Amino acid sequence: MQYFVVMIDYGRRGREAIVDPELTRREVVSRVASGEYTNISFIHEIAERSVEDVTDDILAEAALPEILPTGADLQANTQDHVRDLRKHEPV
Image 1 (cartoon, helix red, strand yellow):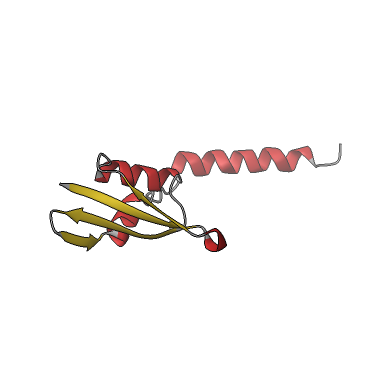
Image 2 (cartoon, one colour; image 1 turned 45 degrees about the horizontal axis):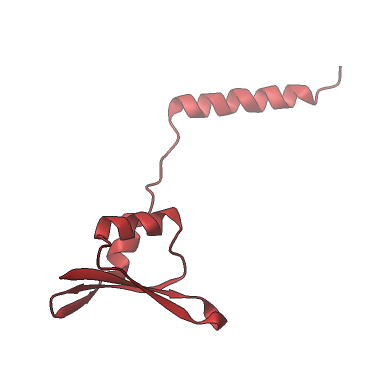
């Protein structure tokens, strides 16, 4: 049997442990990435008789990759900026 324990800290209101044996690693990562799980204290993976802290691994998996703008995006941004400047020119 394998399952995950996600401990969420609500500050003064206390903590909540989310334990669902049917929750897979992929679903935990998805919920962290979507923002459903925030203020995470820790995430433990329980497998058979061992406990492993997988907080850093799951947070790293859930992080969205930084997408750098392409040349076309930069060109469009420049054209938009020039158009906005023209709006404020005296007639």
